[in-house]
Image: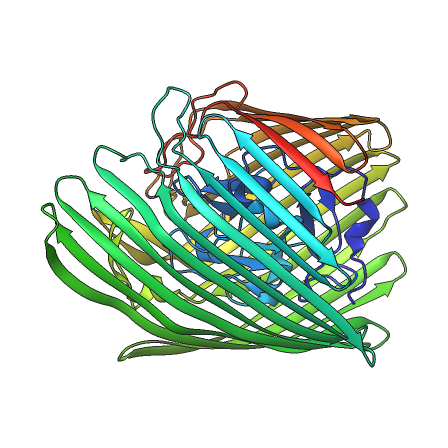
Length: 613
């Protein structure tokens, strides 16, 4: 339904980093707008725990938080609830202190992941200040079978898919023991997880109907952190998710959808020799979206409304003594929320110029028992793109964005794997004003791109330490995040394909204190060689050291990390893959988080794939 974005001119056959048009129907771009980077299941080389491992290879993206299966990510220094994460268009909202992620979804169920960067993400409303991570399961399921096993954590995974006519289903089961780092230290990273995706579609009288159901169940999921196992041991004994979406559209005219995400999980935190806390979480995310395309003054655009609700968000905590006696029971959150947004977006082509803009208004109500608050906000964006000639494109984006505080930041008072957390019901909404400038050159199979950005922040919400075991949240009145990303690629028309990228970023408050979760400076070289039945991929990362840190962080040492894989096609539908992660057995931290454990050491794996040809 959406027209191709102005960035589509630079599409290449490179699969490592591809600039594409937004596929999400609430995407920012019609024929101008955001930078969208894509990673597919075919070119994933690094660790394969969650989608964070997939997208970490993209310039402007880095990991943040502690580690393990719940490793989260940061987009241009925006993390936690500032990044909107979607699965097949359904927003994923959790109340973990590390923010939203889709760790409950086995990566084997994914076909590709799109990462949208730039100020125009304000069209998504609250929670998209840093951008959007859109996960896509296969639209058309083909019959297939994938099995893999690896060293270090004895991990293995089995995934099977079946497609018939307009129906399809994929199921995946995986499990792993605790891994070890490069020095042989045990990491609390074990897990068992099952996930599936059931899809169907039909067409009648010019309408297209689509339904998706994604259930997931996990147990004994370790929380990897630096305090384990001597001081504190954290795990998630059980985790249940269900994502359901129904959509109807008339191509080229309008679209409507309804969705529901149910989650029920438990965390267990043991302070060795002191106490144990069991926290039960349950919540529903419900919502709907309707939008219609328009042609105003010979331009292309759309207008629409979106409703996003939270129902029955409940968090209970039980505390036991070191002798396993029940000491206290507390009901930390019993909340609901409703957000209603209306948006309009319009773009025009004026010869070599593409001009566009959008507006959105959101109103939210949040409550927790007898506490209630409401707020509203208007955001806008404008884009300008100039195709100087067939090779050069210059673009500029400006936009404002915001984020309402989450129920957890406002009202949660309890124990987490990080320690005790105290909510702040007086938090103000975050606001930002952003500018992005980009230049791209493409001549044959040679391309260069450079993007630079600046974000001015107001009432930025920071998590800080009141004491060594107690944390809370506060607003920083003024702050800023700025940086740039550069990439160079060549060889897309031959067997050798190369992509070199670099990222640099800085973020400070008005007093010169560094913000947390920023992208560390890093240089990356992605190499692919493909000939006949053989495909070899290499992902080499050199991360520079960084001494400047934000609240709750530690300095990062330089690191050289090499991941590689080789694939051989036995037949047109069967192939074998040998992969090695952390080939150099580097001893390094994945993030600057003060509680982060070291990353797993060298891991060797073998993967078998069969696809119905």
